Image 1 (cartoon, rainbow, N blue to C red):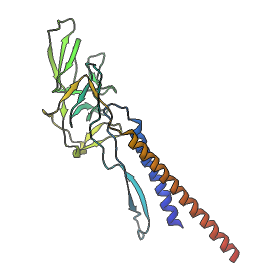
Image 2 (tube, rainbow, N blue to C red; image 1 turned 30 degrees about the vertical axis):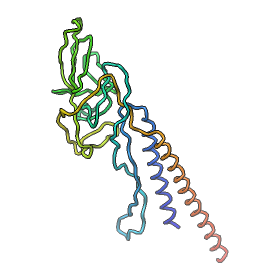
Image 3 (cartoon, rainbow, N blue to C red; image 1 turned 45 degrees about the horizontal axis):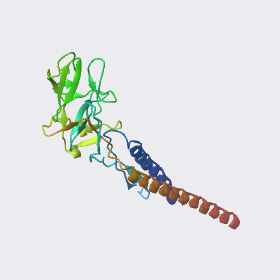
Image 4 (tube, helix red, strand yellow; image 1 turned 180 degrees about the vertical axis):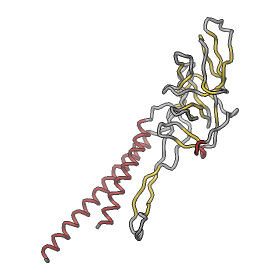
Length: 247
């Protein structure tokens, strides 16, 4: 009895973990540049100072889907979408180099270029800072050009260039914040092949219908695990009654 109960209990717990992962994907269906996660379940033996006769289920996140999302035209000069497999380099809260596809930039009161979540955007020699300006444009190679404040429209100055990278996705992993990192802290050099499109944003690559289907399937699986646990309990009660009668 205990084997069936243990299997059903661990299966139900891991199914809840899988539902959390798919629910997070679905919650970010409208998040700019979001990359959805895969999930899979596999069996794991319970090892220790005993014969490994127990096996439990384990849900894991084996990979992230790196396919591009759809482009959304905004017409905003501070919005850029990365083409193909490129990434924009940013600095996370701990000062580490990280990568994102979310190009909805802002300019702070001190002239720093940041993401919509306030992360510094990296350029040639660190975070990008801009002088007072009337207009800003991004070239397809990430070049940042401005018209200085009070200057004529023809007075265009090249200030910096976004650090764009195109690493092999096998060398990348997604952090809890949704940012992408190089595995084992690896950082990548600027890639001249990486291109951006100004006035556009990239949407999430989450397929809402697919995620809803997964969530409903997992709900049915969870109900089956609960039914197995109920069956085990009923069988144990029936066995106890038989023993009492025979006793």
